[in-house]
Amino acid sequence: MTRFIHIADLHHARHTGNAITAERTSFAIQAEKLAQLTEVIRHDNIKAVLIAGDIEVSDPKDFIPYLQTWTTLGATVYLVFGDHDVDRLAYQACWSQIEHVHVFLHPGYIFDPTLGAGIYGLSCETNQTGLKEKIARTPVRADSYPNIFLSHGDRKRFPASVVDRLGFSYYALGHHHRYEVIRRGGADLVYPGHIFSVWDGCGKAWSTGYVIGEVTSSGITHVFHAFEGPETRRLSFNPFIRDGSRILLTRDNLDGPPEQWIEEDDTLLREFVRSTLADYLDDYFVTPSRSNGFPTRRLSMTARTLLEDSTRFEEFYIRSFKVTKTTQ
Image 1 (cartoon, rainbow, N blue to C red):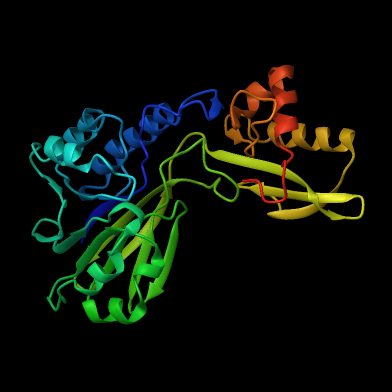
Image 2 (tube, rainbow, N blue to C red; image 1 turned 135 degrees about the vertical axis):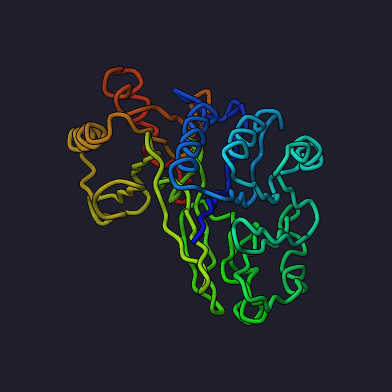
């Protein structure tokens, strides 16, 4: 039995632009998450790290320390590009110089004897143009050992009939920002989710982590592991969707039902927000998009900061109300 790590959707850029007022950048928090993988590789004797696209670094040199550390510990890195990896030629030129790092700029297949499995890598283009057709043209595998299909794309690009025909045991995919497993065509299509983001909108505040896969003679199994440290959470009120005097409350990555009605009473709503924040002091709360009257479209702060800073709390409270029925 051997093990691999599967991650995706790092979006590890150094900037958030002027679109968000953030207490800390995603880049800084993501760096802490990625650093956790070093101990995982060491402790769990990981033989490979599979990166399923949308790495999206501002400078390819920002990713070198991780690649060097992971490979020094004995893990071989295999990576493909997602539709956000527009600077892939620069990435490939930089990272391919590191021993035991394999970059699938073009479709290719490698058997890893240490892992005991083969990896077929297929990067995707902007807007995933032509991806479904490229998947359908993938050479069929009929080996005595398990094979992994490493790629980036929406699950709709992987029809059951094609998955069944190709003969891969495990699809290490990226694009969906939430951990998700789709059983299709006799194989698991696995999305590990993203690393961390203070940007993602409605329905995209989730627990983030990585997948550890196990390769055995009979196939591949996997388990999702959440990262330690802060998570992104969100609550919002939609006054355009009503039930009499009640408005719609939405919770993302919070205890309680995802949606429920709540009385549109200012005192009650403020107390509800405060009590919710108090349960997640070190996590980051992200507001819906709202630019009117504010310098940025979103606010992202820890619950602790919001409770300790009355000005920030007031801004957060106001921004928690959607400005249109469909605001993200």
